[in-house]
Length: 114
Image (cartoon, rainbow, N blue to C red; front, side):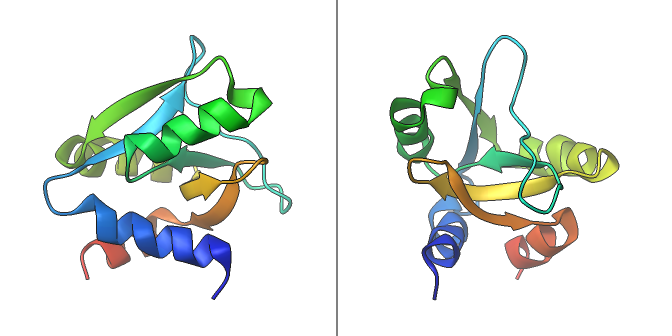
């Protein structure tokens, strides 16, 4: 199993039914960089500490701050918005390049509800 898969699996284990999803933002909003395949993904983490580590260790995100999103809001507002915008969901990105596993909204929702 790849490191990206391990981090993605941890996302679902750590989130829990009443947990929060975390992202990072600056004054312009949440980043949605293009991956090597050209698709854009918006990053989310299952723990604030994971998001904070990216801010502390990835120069491109040094000026960002964490943002907490309650799970209910993430499911009711963010997931439909991500789907409508054609964005992937980046799961627990890590490392000096802030990379990891990206999921479609449909696959993410199926796994979340499994």
